[in-house]
Length: 172
Length: 234
Figure (cartoon, rainbow over the protein chains, first blue to last red):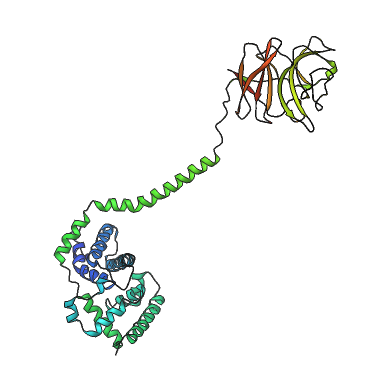
């Protein structure tokens, strides 16, 4: 596994997909609040590997990986909430001293506010504004209807504005 | 795209840029994970743990159900021998000729007096050859003779004497000369004691309280309302 058979030049190998998507999936898990983003991406690929022989449409691999990473990130953040009993205190969202020096002041506030949104609102915003997925793509990834995606996005942006407005030095 | 949306996208890109995995090292790790044996154990645990819990609950329920519905141990159906006796019937005291010395069985309370139950052998005037085993109750303290006041409408009650090991007997009943919870038997002289069992297997010990002629008189404590149906000689 992982190597294309002769004549299958159009079908990507598992290794190809790993190199193409591993970084993206790791970043997705990181943006969703998981503190072990690389581990989640690794496990997502392990699950994909287990199903590899039964996959008929390799163009949907990216969607499968995204859904797996979102679900595993949920489990991880839920676990972290229980362990820490404080969802606001997520080290993965804390900026390192080096990053603080680089990131601008507005981005720091936006990131802090993102952590206060509900889990689904944060997922919708990350998938839309980072992965640039369509409403249908977000709906498929999260397993919800397009209407719910639109409503959730709307509420998430409203909350974002509200929190930024509440914060001293918020949105300007 | 609004200004906020643009800033949000930039912030997310900046945050995502903090993660820069080493793809070669990650691929090596991925290959290691694909071949790790622990996966199967974990998967087995995922299915096995809930299954084990369900099985444990089901087993507990089944055990509890069995314990709740389980009846007392089955009676020893083949214990001893069948105890089939002719039921004692009322005989007018005036028609009886007492043969053996009455054996005092027990004392019990009636409506107004205390009564003493006696067992004895007798014959009847109309049939002098028919030996009977009789139970009679007379007022406690009164001598047992033909002038004694009979108790209720069933005293004396008599049953014909047979030639078996247990020759005759009577089970106590309300209104009878022997109170409920008692049973008396006339048995072969070679039998000093015996065990009797009712249909549910409940045991009663019959012990000698006297002799009537050559035979022994045994008195047993039995469950009221349940007549012994089998006996075993001790």
